Length: 300
Image (cartoon, rainbow, N blue to C red):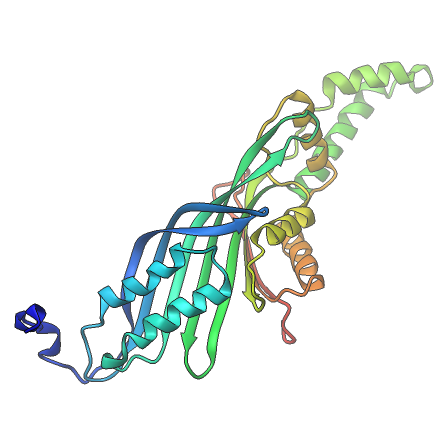
């Protein structure tokens, strides 16, 4: 006799006629490998997995669902391995008539980043989220979200700062313009050029793209977005690097709308579809500037 047959199964009692959209587990810790920059890395990963529960059913087979996820720890994560794991997990729920399963995988990847001038480097952190839905009729749909952190210099603040500097310059040199030479002006600018400083803020872009191929290519998506924005946050910084970062910001002011359109253009031109959420964490006031957009769809 099977010992488990003697154990009570309270889940089969007191059934209900109310369906539930999703039931499952969250914050499952798994060591799932990812392919990043042609290397396989294994970072701490949290997984959420859920299935629908139809009328009169309860008592999802959590242990079977958990066991199906274990396969994800054996190979680098791809849409193919994810589909196989979710298909197996869904088949384990036939007794409760589940026909759809959902999964979210969250981790962080570290990527090596060179300094702007000096021959040094450091590591940037990128939150990553893979979301998937599987059913036997439509198959699997997968999306990939990455978060890119960058600096945004306010165009309005830059214009106001330039105007303030112009006014104080004219006030300083209005009396003998013919006797003002370049050296005087250069010295004055070195001393007074920061009379008014445009404000910049740390900013974040959450980029979610539809995954249709057999790979995630996380690093390609990050590189594309950082290139479009132009001012990703730095790692190792000496004075030469900081000066170059200041120049990059000064030549690259952008409102939250500008950042959104740059990303939408770059992503669409490279065949991506999805949506993004931009947040500029303002240094001028206590509230933030935000934007949300869809891209790559015919009606976007």
